[in-house]
Image (cartoon, rainbow, N blue to C red; front, side, top):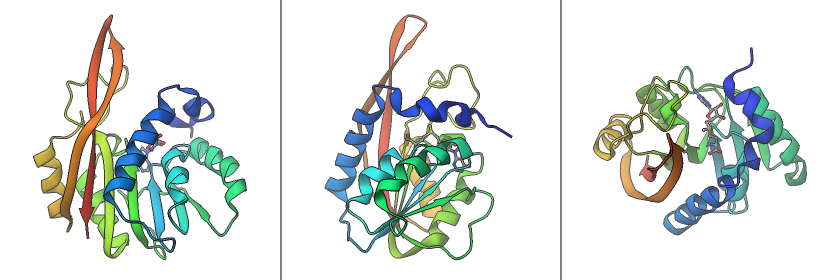
Length: 204
Ligand SMILES: C[S@@+](CC[C@H](N)C(=O)[O-])C[C@H]1O[C@@H](n2cnc3c(N)ncnc32)[C@H](O)[C@@H]1O
């Protein structure tokens, strides 16, 4: 069955704000986190893989995971130039079950968590799938009034820092960095509203 992201997949990258936002996020990550060319990274809820492909140049291998087959088709098209050794594609929902036989040095998840009902379970499964000393990088909306997704219901209207860091601690992580310098502007009923994205880093 198609989900709402399947129908958005082929035009996802055409939004003019998309790439500059990824660039800002990647700059913060590259400033705060050391990579090794041996790193195995996971872009979870990857969409068309914009963040994962951008970070793959610092790492050895990237797994792109999403529940939307339409999004993963876009990743497959892009993956041609990286070669099979560098890219894996996974259609899985870690909030239901952590897949067997995979582990990662770093997990990135951008604008996904507010779509996930059981965030505590997802974070616990991320922890299970990280190698010792691995990092989880979560990029998501700070608490908002619900107008970000004004046409559709989502399980979470963003997250407050303390609430989110408590979830990380309960899942076995040590929060290590939090910044919220990225602002997204959206027009709502003729008014430009500002929403903040946070970048959180937590160590296993
Ligand atoms: C707002 S998009 C973000 C895509 C990409 N991370 C980006 O920043 O361009 C949210 C993505 O999360 C995926 N998603 C939603 N719930 C998910 C879940 N439980 N597990 C994995 N992916 C999920 C959607 O299919 C969609 O591709």
